[in-house]
Length: 101
Image 1: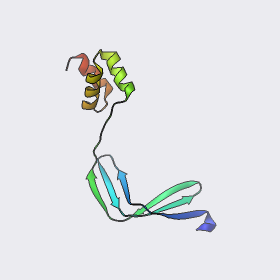
Image 2: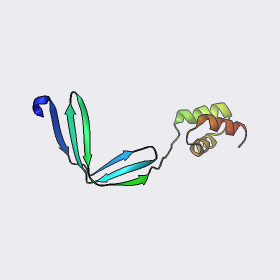
Image 3: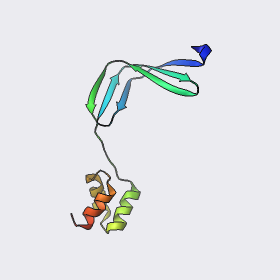
Image 4: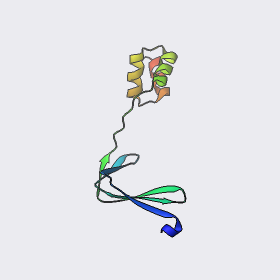
């Protein structure tokens, strides 16, 4: 493999988490190899895994809060709560706050 420009390196990983759209795959004590070839790195993960639902958390950015406050006249606290409730959907937040919801 070295003659072909392929390098392999074992990594001492404690865990690996692969985040999918709706769940996470969690590998505990996996065997992980980093493979370098042609200027790119690939990873090979081998081991048992468990699945868990993906928990999505959202924290509104200062820019999003400022935009909602500017567009609706709402307080900063109300803007933050509305952004958290709508998971960052700024258009829905602005519409709801303008309609008084």
